[in-house]
Image 1 (cartoon, rainbow, N blue to C red):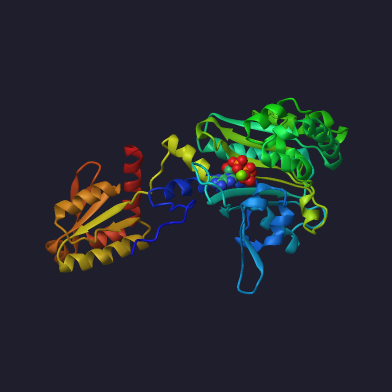
Image 2 (cartoon, rainbow, N blue to C red):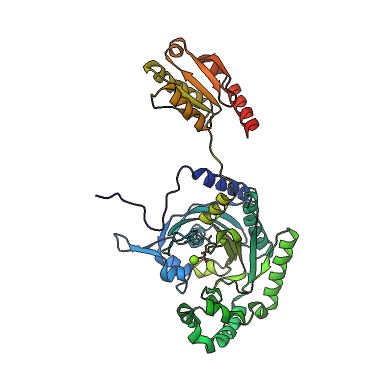
Length: 429
Ligand code: ATP
Ligand code: MG
């Protein structure tokens, strides 16, 4: 029988890679905490109807990409294809937005879409999702965008660009939709198949098409920005002014859209030239109509999602790969010494040190090689004699210096040992 392999479009994030993910998560957490955002953890499965209403049946995500199944009780269940809908459901269901209050929320976790797998595109992927619920102020737009750029730049990413647009409010968009359909209809036969379909169902999405001929046609389509009413224009101007105040660069892209009725005003995407075809690291926008659409009180909101796979791909190109290093590596040989190594490791861990114990029972030479590779600063050696006398050889791996210590002293002075190791590591790096 053959071995069972991971599902197509999914992958294992192996131990050599998790330090990078943890690093990203730590930076994100830091940036979010100091901006007053709180973590929320909604379930990964929801009623299918949530996504049909919350993302829209006319989208690719709902129309073609969802993992939907019937559970044993005959309910239609969907693995979340994104995080916003579930998060908004949780906010409504738990009454988190009382009149006039604001909720700043974030979540990180997997999402599922049945897509054609390729670099930066998987069937199970991860999103870092941030939502600011309850404010109509353009300052909210600027705050949310600033957090995205702050996280990305703190991680050391450069050569990022941001596209910004406004899709206005419902009536702006209705007028624009009519103009767009009027412009596109004579070209109907030349549009790609999906776009022909969208001409009646969701025409704004055609602007987003990746088909070459459709893109050419769309080049000369009317500009959404020319259809914004005064309020929408004012909101958009203010967002731009605030971004400029914050020193955040952007370019206006009038073809950037979110196709559904409850999207309003600001839409933005952050791209990297280093990602090839899947260039968008972060996508977001305002959705003042969604909460009401899902049965909640009429509440404005704005948010974004960063694709973690694309982000970590970029960081790997930067060679920014942190490692979690051990403080101490313990080598031992002989029955009594091995038992002693176990209790010493335990004692040092309780004193706050990161300790790896060699379990191989192989020759000292081989164990020393592994100690070097472990990245530990200090190596503790226990042989028969040391086990008998309650001592250990402390070998500093960065200098090769060696000294004998009693284990009692070592444990009593664990704090000191820790700061010595910390100092050695700083000198070394
Ligand atoms: P794309 O145009 O690349 O398909 P999208 O518009 O479908 O993106 P969103 O729904 O806005 O993407 O999701 C936000 C972010 O999540 C994207 O910018 C991307 O970084 C990431 N993302 C979306 N789908 C996938 C996927 N299948 N695999 C990996 N990351 C993804
Ligand atoms: Mg997509």
